[in-house]
Image (cartoon, rainbow, N blue to C red; front, top):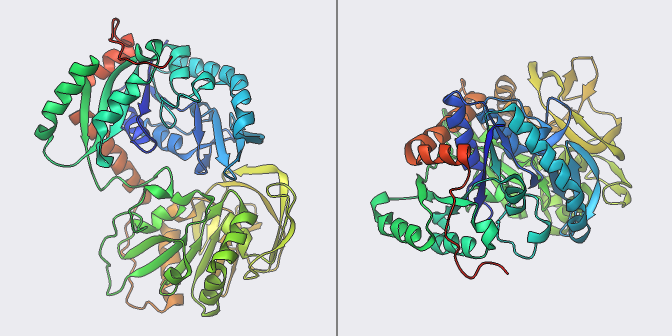
Length: 506
């Protein structure tokens, strides 16, 4: 059976996902057959797998780092929050209904067997499995029902590496406190620490690294430097820069920028759809939450949503709906993706997601939507703007009437989405990742917005940029971590006799 380890984090967004991706890339390049695994993910960023299921996008990226197609085995439980109190639960790729925070605590006990058997199967099929925890392993109020952090580690006897984000400050307290709050049996599995996102001279950390090792009896396995190039496939849109800018915009090839405003919906899903636009020189992509930010936008994007009707009401309450309508009335380009496409239509009938019944859409596309119990999960192909395209669909809402011409002509001759008077809508995610289509689309958007000085640079490959970031992650692991120690943890588990740090959870 293959070796395995768990990468836990002191906090959410400490860097678990990128460390797992880096470890997968490093191992795969060394000829190790490695697979990623996250027992339970909570995210509205997801993808459709080749086997027809749905998993968190982070695990799809980690699979790419390992040279694998995404599989439901890599993320057996996915929670998709629809409100602050309830989530859709997806098990082995299939939606199985809604759960509240309290009801899920009981449901997790049922899912523990699914998680255990899935991980066991991966360990039989691969040389190594790199597991990612969820949130922090020291949520002591949730430990009894935990299936993703120390509960998983104990059940599968996994060594644990704890990652701390030094960019947030207090990293040594986070590392020590995380360990000290675990009970003795959990502490016995923690084999080392990794410090992430360090800026500056590593020599400045030496005394702190020595002290945390002396205090805990565990080594710091390495310090990963901050690299601003690493921004693709963020787990959620809060991971972007403080002013909402996506990526690191390169200077324009022409004389003008193309300014893209993406409405950051409260229940935004697949926010990563717009990252391919941000890879283009001269395209400035920014998430916005209030109407004034749309005033000078050339292109407005309404992205996907896990709660279409609720987020549509939020658009109206905040004044963003009127700002979007003004933008469209000027003839400026507007795009809706999945839930955003549904909002642009004339009417939404929803007795499934929100139970709101019939709701008026924004009326910018002559399209009616009806939500259905069954979820559409597909990876279609077709043609858009004269270019071959592929994407993926994840939605309950279905088009029941459309009077616009389609945006995409499917390979079977049917139409998908809508396109009229500078307004486009589609249920497809990942459409902008098609390089030739993206170039044609940006020329269309620049023409519609009067940006005659904007020039599409050409030659931009989104797939190559993603691969370059994964290679950079592999390089960072190879150059900055004690990879021999990591291999020992994978092969032999946590060392015996590790010190217990008081107080330890009772």
